[in-house]
Length: 343
Image (cartoon, rainbow, N blue to C red; front, side):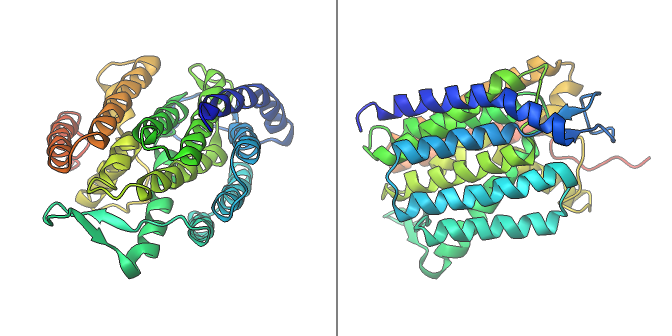
């Protein structure tokens, strides 16, 4: 297995890169296009979807070749396949949110059936630092998988943003576990990163294709899975702190969006133009500059995750608290949490 993850990354990258133009042609042929209808849309012209299909082919092919065909991996592949089918339908016909959520829950249950489980959560108030979830293990796992699956969708608002951030998150998770020797999880992280980065050249501004819900749900699902599989191998008090920072940007943007909508007495499902990338553009950054700044934030959070994973429990928790405070200060300055002014 030594260095197998390098080969897995390379082949996932190449497959994703080469298949994406074919996926673009298919999207145009069947009419799977993102036609801007509201002011929330930043692009002006119709843009083909189905970038997620290219990443799906890359991920499935590499998982089949480079990973053991055990119950866990087969279940993950089945769950991912279900979400991609749902994403294709949604990209073409706009599936109702509740039905889409139902399928996401089913995909999460399939992963749980395959052995993907969160067994511990961090408890800084205990000497051991861990709390066994017991009966809460399954619902917590489902909530995590569905939650992360949707966070990637929420940040997919600028060319190259979701793909780049997902690739950075996957590499971060790889680096946090590479010294632990969890070979198949390392390879899985490399595959997800390779597929995301292979798609990125076609999706970076100006984009030629969008990943659509097909891609955002796939990447979110896979990131949620590898985060659990990497964490569950480590009986450390930072079990869930590390993956939270590793996938930090989409988690934080989603968290602030929910808080913002609650403060303003709006449905948490209601879309707005107050996300982090919107606020940065209001500060005067252009499209590319905004994406690059968000890449930088993702890398910073990723390095924080790597540092925490190699620290003792107390140091890791303190670093996490300090970075969290810095994030709150930044969020306040960028008006990510604010009460709408009355006109």
